[in-house]
Amino acid sequence: VTGRVVLVGAGPGDPELITVKGQRALAAADVVVYDRLVAPTLLDLAPRAQRVYVGKEPRRHAMSQPEIGELLVREAEQGHIVVRLKGGDPFVFGRGGEELDALMSANVRVEVVPGLTSATAAPCLAGIPLTERGVTSAFVVLTGHAPEAYEPLIRALPAGSATVVVLMGLSERHRIRARLLEAGWAADTPAAILLDASRPGARTWTGPLANLGAADGVGASTSPGVLVIGHVTARAARFAAASLSAEEISWPL
Amino acid sequence: VTGRVVLVGAGPGDPELITVKGQRALAAADVVVYDRLVAPTLLDLAPRAQRVYVGKEPRRHAMSQPEIGELLVREAEQGHIVVRLKGGDPFVFGRGGEELDALMSANVRVEVVPGLTSATAAPCLAGIPLTERGVTSAFVVLTGHAPEAYEPLIRALPAGSATVVVLMGLSERHRIRARLLEAGWAADTPAAILLDASRPGARTWTGPLANLGAADGVGASTSPGVLVIGHVTARAARFAAASLSAEEISWPL
View 1 (cartoon, rainbow over the protein chains, first blue to last red):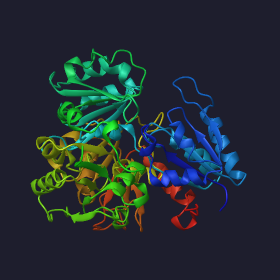
View 2 (tube, rainbow over the protein chains, first blue to last red; view 1 turned 120 degrees about the horizontal axis):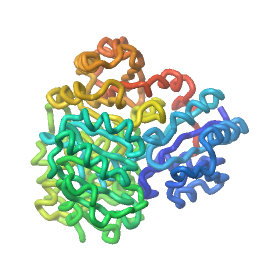
View 3 (cartoon, rainbow over the protein chains, first blue to last red; view 1 turned 90 degrees about the horizontal axis):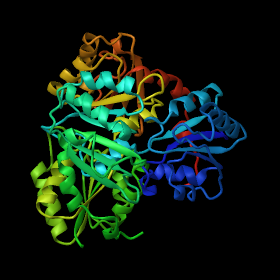
């Protein structure tokens, strides 16, 4: 086995939230193919690798999905260790399945190293457990990009039966709030908006579901934002006061 | 700030699937308080730490949840850096919320380092994307431990509207299959059972939802098992053939 592709999840933003295995794959890489949301310092972990940026801004890709697939295949066929570094987890809203298909069709050997998706990491960092004994024992993860998919799901979900997490839903928060209220969710259900989780300038809005649409202070932010709706979010404000700030953390390096 | 507690997610089993930040917290720890599902080699990353095992086998805990909270508070108040190391993510079926409450009530400073939950990591490692463009843009995570919670949710979920992931659901697979079929899910919906994901001896069963209850070869396994139901699982069998086995991976250490 010579050439191969390793699909690696880079995690939610903080370069230290990559896995040890992902770090090790980068150290071995001949080529790193990376997206917009990947922390630049992660690339320094691949000192001898050629770096290829493939974009992935909403509606403005530096390279199309089929072109990315062709690039990965071509590099692996040249005998290279190719790391495909994707923000979050490769298989949670990451189009990793399509890249996997391109690789399997070309008989390229492939490995996957999971990464922390912001769907679980952002709430965790804000002191919000997605499940809690006696409160909620399920969670649902949706994307705000696909109203035709999330609207029937939200309408069907029994009110309060699961914590609802919405990725890429900041601009859809009015609509999501409306659908949940129509579906019978209580107006005072605790909700949170997590902006730039694990990145410098991370901030949390908390308030009742009824105010999720306005969400004073969030405005028309273009940061990555995660919405969380459910009783488990009630702890977030208190946690922000009790937790250590980045400046206070002084572990040895 | 002297004493503090860091809640760290150890990930799904493979010790290399901890985050770099979690690894660094262990290196700084004076005390590590750990559960059953944590890989023993992770403890070696905390060479100077006192190790406290607090059990957490189903229905057989070495220490009760309130006792764990008291232990964490006591150690932090003595000025120690305490790492609370939990399998998976601390806040996904991890009772991390209860430990957070105990710490906040005692005014102990706390930080959280998210970990990979097997709900996302196990499917990822098996080549199963939880979401896929044009196929599924949502997923639901449930626990088999709480039928009173998952049954209404499964009944309400429009058939095929989300990938369904069940943790700790191996012994409940007959019931989960029955509820999904009653709710209108097609009998040939692809399904998978992921056993011991990321651990030595990891194996995957795939088949139609109709056969999930029997699932030949799975039997009465007592391994950690993750059920995945939805069209995204169709790729798993092909991925198993295309992916590198542990023996073939030869990155430099």
